Length: 297
Image 1: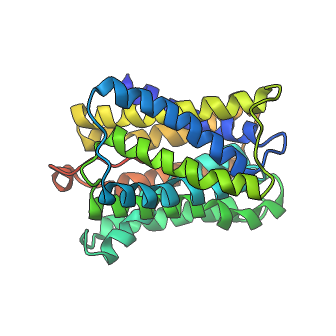
Image 2: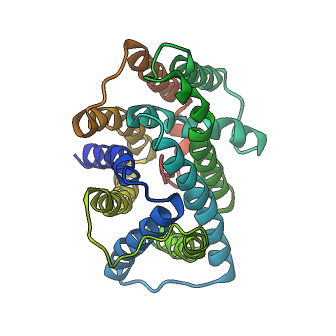
Image 3: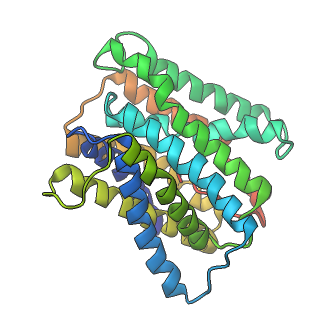
């Protein structure tokens, strides 16, 4: 049940993100308020844990890297691309995170070559090709120009995951780490929002776009905590199945909330992508004793 709720919650953040940009809010303004909501939610959970938050140079460095790799850059490209691409397509593309993580881990010497996982990576690239081919998955052929932009987010999430796997969390637990990263992300994004003229004033009437932003950020924070809880109790291999639910539910939520309808080519792309995920997923033995990593951060 926790796996389903977490996966469906994370999948919901994709169409909510599209709704949030529907009235023309700039990406830096959206990122700032996203980090504010995450800071509040995660801060409350950190206080509920009753453990002091260790502030060290190593912890601040870790949080800065995670804030840049996991929030500022990928959220910027996410908001720019989801304003132009169908939400269902974005839900499929975000599944590239574990597929892109594998060659990075291989280059860093943290993983070993596996033909099975190389095939999985090729299947993921094949799924992207099915989306990009003219007259197949995209309602407007001009949208293909934004696919490389949409792939930047999973690329940076993969970089973030490998950084955490390589360097650790500097003595912070998952909630503390994400809380500190959210605080630093908030500090970075505020001057960017103000300097670019994209700051969203909180003294204004709230509509569907603003409610979608708040809901998306809160669900993101809670889903992350749910994923960590699940990984700690059921194991990282079981929790990793959340990736499949995020992708499938993201497409379903797009159909329900946004009225999106997809061609057979997009359904084929999703099936190929999920097949690729099943091959790239680490074996249970490889994850024994390893810290859990979120499929989407």
